[in-house]
Image (cartoon, rainbow, N blue to C red; front, side, top):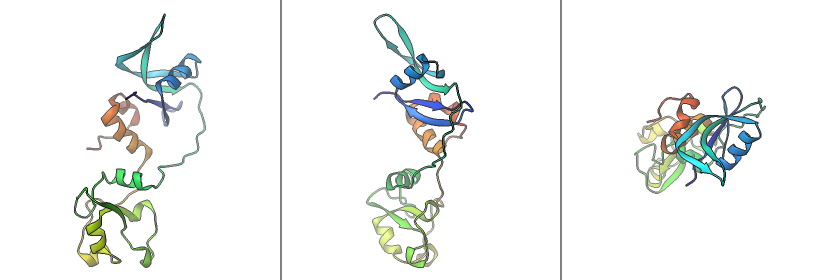
Length: 169
């Protein structure tokens, strides 16, 4: 698998994740400068060797409108670490509204959790308290930095000093 490159704005906020080819082009065109490299990797051409960038910073500030993390099934499961928030199971996962929609609950980050089919069926159209369940972790809206740090922990530890987040452990 090819390593990805973290792109930071001039103020060091994450802007994008790009391929190494795109990062090298930005560097050669003097639109970005490397801040960290994958020390054990390099890119060779016929007559030149390039360092393999891990983090680059744009030389000019780019105004990027904040879009936040999109609410999707995949991102919700990712936030909840692919585990039922009632019993901890990782099998037959579904999505549950903590406050049921029939009781005014909305489809938003702070009202959705990952639940196994068994717990979701048992809870049904009732509140967590009515069923006697408790949440492993309260639902929250994740940040882009949180997801980037999760990726960095597994694939790009060179990014961690630039993300400014604590270990997710």
